[in-house]
Image (tube, rainbow, N blue to C red; front, top):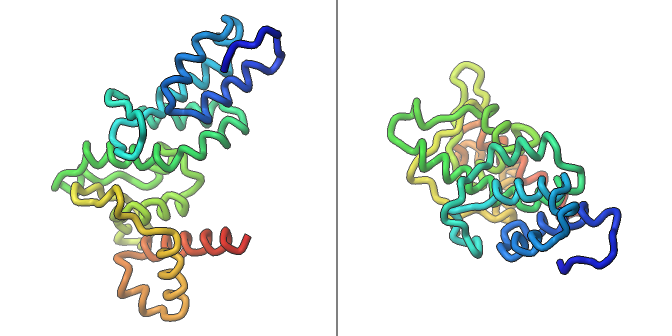
Length: 220
């Protein structure tokens, strides 16, 4: 990150990539301030700084150099990703999406995890949009991974809302991909297990999504 004595046409672009790769390294922010003005105030570097500030976490004990006063601006982050990031910037940021979304779910549970189910439930389409998921299936699979409870629509039987409860386990208690795959294969062999081990149609469907994706990745 030392300033180059030469004027490089793509320097701002690659400085921005560097800032996103080391998204939570506080030293990188200080190093960026030493860049020449034309590089520092370029669109890629300014965008990377905004993304860095919105991606900081304060509720994940596994994050080193955790930002205690981080605003958890996950909604602004995903809006910026959709609106202005380049393809390569989005690919770099995707490696951080898991921890950012987990932090967002924690923040939502802390705000909404109360006894009244009408207040502590959020619709699935709204959460898919807020957290930048590709589709409902990807979102449901992630909810199963976090052991969040999904409530079906009484009329259609389709997944409708997520119920945020205070008792939901978070750190160190998730199912591994291997465990989900084993469960999925067992379901294929014996459909009755679906009824025994699943609370809702949404959970059953999410289990199959996790299994299929894990199986395809292992085959590759």
